[in-house]
Length: 626
Image 1 (cartoon, rainbow, N blue to C red):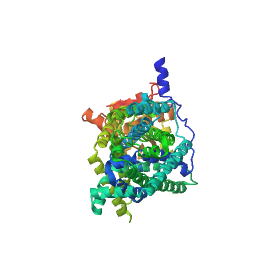
Image 2 (image 1 turned 135 degrees about the vertical axis):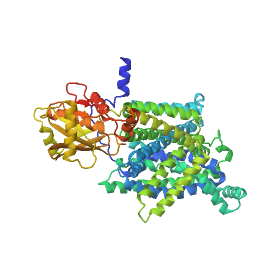
Image 3 (image 1 turned 180 degrees about the vertical axis):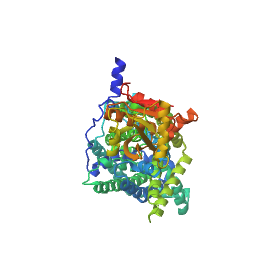
Image 4 (image 1 turned 30 degrees about the horizontal axis):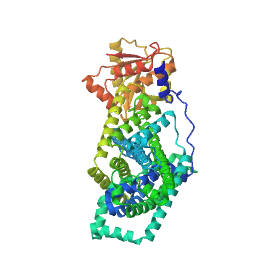
């Protein structure tokens, strides 16, 4: 009984009656939706200045300037085009799926889902780790919570508990958190800038350190270009900005696209200003040793300045604001995972039945997040490479998708340049910090293994969402008055002639002892894209000489035949019979042909689909084989 209650609780949203749907998502002004994406994008200010200094040292402001230029003149125009091409929130993954049809597109999407999972999982773990860093370095933190690993795991456990109980993103909360966080960062940045203005010798010392490291400006520019990929996690937020398009209010689709472009442009502008300003003040004012692992500014450079110039009370308020927005960034990432995986895998037939329920997925994702936290020792800097890998691969895929879609446009050279920039950035990031690629490959391998096992186990489901007959097809079905319809499947090869059909009908009547008055109908199923999992079947009818022929197009032959037979039984009230011929060849090869090509030994496969779909044997269509 306890196990049953647990199963019911875990699968509660899965066991809703079919056809029952929740209310449509409400829409909101673009600026409030920007705050929803901003809990992820803007929260990187909590750790981005520190990561930038560890990567570039005193050159951090110049390397950050390169990041800002790429943001404004590469990523922003790119995602404005993605928003135009994908106005319903599917993003660049759906664009690439359309560009690469059949199994090639499906495999490409599965690989990108692996990188997207890396992005979202690392967002959760990195945000929790940085929130923990702010907590344990606060002077009011209790001694028994001085372990960053323990606090990180507690924050992740709280996040998982919230989603297990049931959590929906609240845009109102996001607006408050983002507004408070940006205001506090602005206050700290302005105060730090005033300190620099009153002590110009600090800037002089910084310039001296730069030219001591390298006296030539061209070399400094070259070094910054080489160091830029290490800062690339500051580009997060663009894919999320496109994904939330359905939440953006607009009078029509064009208005929604315009408002999305406003969101992307405003967010990029705000972030660019803060990236430059925070990188400069933290580099100039904070001692280099404080950025090191275990240092007071490690993963919390702006909090360090808040405590230093405003005292513990204001600094604690800044810590609380940072912890809250980072925690909400983790919630946003979890919600993104719960929306992303069910959007693709069930449609491909590549997810177990329980994967349609939120709570089992939450438990899986939390287990992965705990593993990643232990693997990286809850260290913010160590997770930066993995996070950047997920972000950059998604942006690079968007750049490639836009380039391919604009190949015949005059702008193709500009989009190709943007694609090359991100290909270089992604390649350099993977070369220098391969742990992100390793984690992504683990996710990709896991997703593909689970996907193909699920596809194989679900291959004999009915998979046809409905059957629609043309008037001529209905006329043919009703022609067998009071008798069961006898159906002969025929592979569609060219145009059927009356002589061909006469020969086939004569053989079937002879082998199965059918009387001359038994009505016979031929069935042709033309195979389409076998990578598709579900389809609505449309059946046409025609007459060839004195023979009746039903014709349909479908990605899966056996499943379509089974669905057609079931529908005929419902229409006529008579159990139809179908007559197959044994298929020659290796049985194992036939199974693989069925899984990946939608065809194979149709007789046993059709019988198995019928057995599962029609438990009552008195209503189950009969399969004959000779």
